[in-house]
Image 1 (cartoon, rainbow, N blue to C red):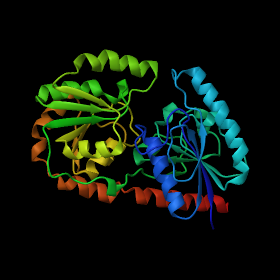
Image 2: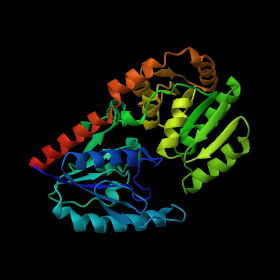
Image 3: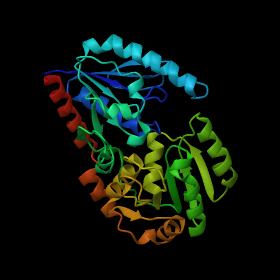
Length: 335
């Protein structure tokens, strides 16, 4: 049976493989798999998105991403979902704010919880629909209602171990306080190595304040900020790094950066936040503070990098993830 799947993105970030947000990257992989399987994919996402299916684009907010911007985006999305929902077999929400534009309907609805359950309105856990998908076992254990666990994955063909490793440590992701980039700077300084930071500073006031106060004053020869990097450059950066550091204090539900590093044969040094230990596995070292991170950086050259790729192939393959979603769509469409 050929299905029509409507994917609804978080309204304030474009859907591409280059987007800093993990939810947008996952949606991109799923959209690609839907089309490859012969189904019809429709994606509602903001301008600047690049999808393989049919894109229904919404205006991209250019100013501050404040309450007014969110309210306007929610209103547009709710109108669009209501207009399309009767013509699709399944609706799949990806934004953490999906409750603001979810349209109740006889059409089956599913929402992937890309973030910690505490960041969602608790009312979503009291309702029977949409069906809720967690992205890790760690997340499931702290989620009041979870209908399925489908672990995230990355395209292993896009990431390969490098032949040469330069003398730098890499930190990647959204630039905000909970991701702990200031700890990465401190650990690299203690270890006496150069740190490269790559990622996007979104137009949230708190994110920009953190960047200007905690990151900018410490940039220089030993700490370089590249900003957002496209996929091709990201692959080269990861494969060429001595290691990736993930000093997040947030309860991470998943970590595509960690998966990309493992697929590139690059070991990961991370805090034990949320799902990070189950993703890192044998592909790196779990540490508890800046001093332990610095010590791990100093000794990382002795790490067996082959284990990283093995871990990625066993647990981080996007094909396993997309097969699970396609099966879930078919199941929901039959109910």
